[in-house]
Image (cartoon, rainbow, N blue to C red; front, side):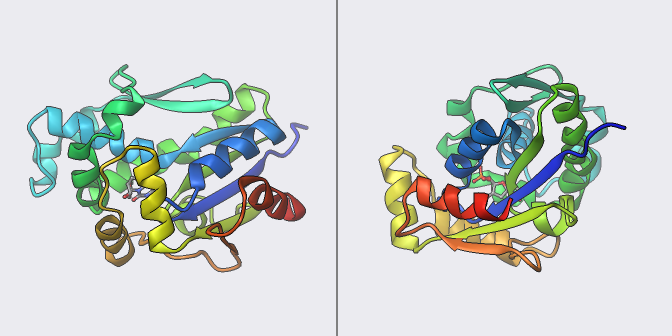
Length: 215
Ligand code: DC
């Protein structure tokens, strides 16, 4: 019998520390790290490059023609769109920060990523890892509602903005969070039964320790 893989869902708004937390946990537990924000960013980049805007019709988005695949490096999964993996810097540019929430509100875009994201468990299995830690906005509510552990991170807006500035990023996080939390499909809300952690006053190690207590 194949051993059961642990699934850990980490959700929260922009700048709450999801990536740092998820990456660290993946390293410590030998899990696959999957950043679903980068999936939405990659599709946004692909569509903007193709001259498509979020107000275009589904027919125009032509999502069915997109081939999604995965490459894994150092326990981290990256999405390839038609064989292309976009560099992180291009995915965190102002143009993408400004458009990604609008594209992520489209049911067709979310539907297109749903199966792909769930299939990452099989990637973790093939890589012979112990589990998967997936970060995003709807991992505990929609993608893996049966995750072994669901974590929801929060932090004060001023702290989150400060973190973004330290990263040197131009990002309207309040505006993005507002679109992400109020959209009709898969809004940013804590999944029932989530472990809620305010990362504002905690060190990365303290956040990780808290999560490990429950894993
Ligand atoms: O985690 P991030 O800031 O890189 O995510 C970028 C955007 O992608 C975010 O503003 C909303 C969207 N997103 C989403 O709708 N659902 C997810 N599971 C992850 C991200």
